[in-house]
Image 1 (cartoon, helix red, strand yellow):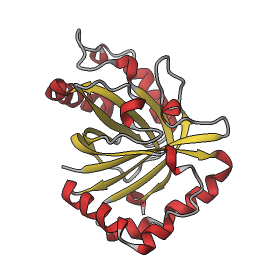
Image 2 (spheres, rainbow, N blue to C red):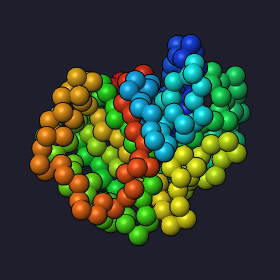
Image 3 (cartoon, rainbow, N blue to C red):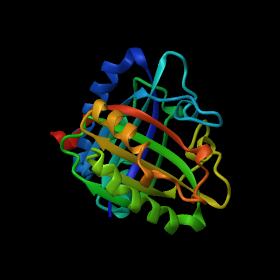
Length: 241
C-alpha cells in the first residue's frame, strides 16, 4: 500500500509564482528518491471552523494561502530512506534555503494508506481532509471509508485516498497533533478526494448530500467537529506529466 508524506504549508499569496517554481525544481530530486507522485495544491475553498480548520493549523496570516500537498512512496522504508538521503545531500539542503514561505509553520508527517482507489491522471480539483480518530477505531474507520468509496466514485470522484498516521511528530510552532486537538488515544488521518474539476466536485457533493446512502452511522468512529477540510487547485502534479 502507498505511503504518504502529507504537508500543510502557509505561503504568501504574492509568492505563488515563486512557490510553483520552487516546487518544480524539486521534481527530479523526489523522482530520484523513488517518490511515485508529487502533488502541490493551492487553497481555493477553505472554510473557517468552529474549533479548528486548515488555516488555523498553520497559523495562516491574512496575506497567505494554505496548501495541501503530498508525496507518495511505494512503502515506508522507501520514504524513510528518501528522507535520510535528503538530510545528507548538499544539493537537497541547498534547495531548502531561501524558500518562498515560512518553513517553521509547515506541518508534515507520514501516513499509511488504509483505502486507496482510482486514477489520478485527470485530476483538476482536490478535497483535502485532516481529522483525529481514536486509535481503537481504526478498523471501523476503514470500513466506513471503504463503504463511502463507491459513492464518491458514482458522483464523479476520480480517486480517493484515506491514510492513517504512522507518526505525527510534535513541532516547535505547528504540528498535526495541535491542529486536530489530538487526544492521547487518537491517531491522525490525512485523506483526499480527487475530482476532474471544481464544477464536478460541487455538483457531486450537492447530489451526495441528498442521497440517503450518505447518512452517517449512528455512532461515527471519529469526532467530526474536529475534522478540517478544504478545496484545493493542483499547481503541480507529476501524475499528469
